[in-house]
Amino acid sequence: MKVLVTGGKGQLGSELKKISTKNNEIEWFFTDRKSFNLSILDNIYIFLDKLNPEIIVNCAAHTSVNCAEDDFETSNITNHKAVELIASWCINNNCKLIHISTDYVYDGKSKFPYVETDLPNPLNNYGKSKLLGDIACLKKNPTCIIIRTSWLYSSFGDNFVTNIINLMKSNDEIRVVNDQFGSPTYAGDLADTILNIILNNKWYPGIYNYTNSANISWFDFANEIKSICDFNTIIKPIPSKSYPQKAKRPKYSILDNSKIINTFKIEQVNYLISLNKCIKILYNES
Image (cartoon, rainbow, N blue to C red):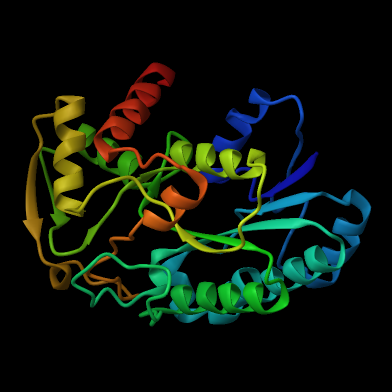
């Protein structure tokens, strides 16, 4: 089985590469912007025709949320137009597609965890481009699987966990937003989930949510990181309005995981278990 992973040097792609040796039945191919640049649309079919994968896991995305407010087109090319072409190639070449999406397709105004049938209403250009990608993916390829996740972090690259640790190492006091709520998701757990789906005997197309189990604020998340790392830094809670950004963020990003749990018998891991695991890896590698 030949599996192509786009965005191979990102957080999720790196975690997939880490577990890629677990199964000898899979021949993995990991690409990045240099080897397979999705913003060059004319090259997508050429590359895929040459490699001819049996499964594509599309982790690649333009994820600069604030930059997308000034440059929607760049975000739209990678998050929408490229996805549309990949989905079309897959349906025409009998290739399965797993596409990674985001909680940012929602406006965060719900009072209950979002289910896959809830109406999307993105607040920012990044969310809009990702939603357009989801819509195009389903339209061009009804056999695809779309996984929406939230607050992704890992031991690879820059993310909330690594940034907070670095801030607490060099500051006696930091400020963190306390009125945005979500479920921090360890990319290693999402990678395990994707591998389980690939190895599943049956393919069930559609949209699925996957996150770790939690309903916390960024402030709560920072305090858990502080506790695990045993820092003395003072963390002060602030409202979103005190930390203005170009792109609006949803205030509530909890995603209901019932569908993916019931369909693929996936375990939803508590975020504290995974956070401890990730921080242990970070400190062992430093």
